Image 1 (cartoon, rainbow, N blue to C red):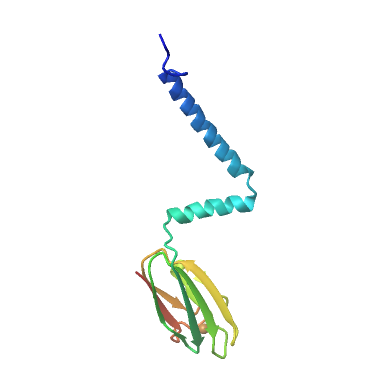
Image 2 (image 1 turned 60 degrees about the vertical axis):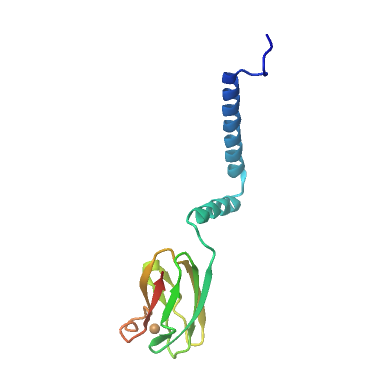
Amino acid sequence: MIKRGLLSKGQTTIAVAVLIIAMLVFILIYILSLPQEDRERLLNMSSETSEGWNGNIEEFTIEVDEFSFDPDFIKVDQGDKVTITLENDGKIPHNLVVAEYNVKTNTIEPGKKDTMSFIADEKGTFAFYCSVSGHRNAGEFGELEVE
Ligand SMILES: [Cu+2]
């Protein structure tokens, strides 16, 4: 009687299971041994991939004065990373808010700029506006369309 391998079928199954567990433990130890910063980067990378970020970057410059935005309509695709630079060409401070996306530039003085970025992960038409008191009602608003 000659044995066909070193291990029987049952033993092989156990050996494979032990190997898989050892690999998982090794990966876990590896992740835990990373410095905090690298670990966060690793975890962020995997969550971005699972959300399917398509990698398109859309950059806009919006000029603002009393009391309007130019342009007052911008359009992007769902999943785009949107970067908006607000330039204050007016005579008083202004800002730009997209409330549904919970993003906002700083309120900037005349002649200054501020930039904000967000992932447009939700489809729809969203208002943007200046949140300085009275400015939105004076016409300082526009629309962001995500399709
Ligand atoms: Cu304003």
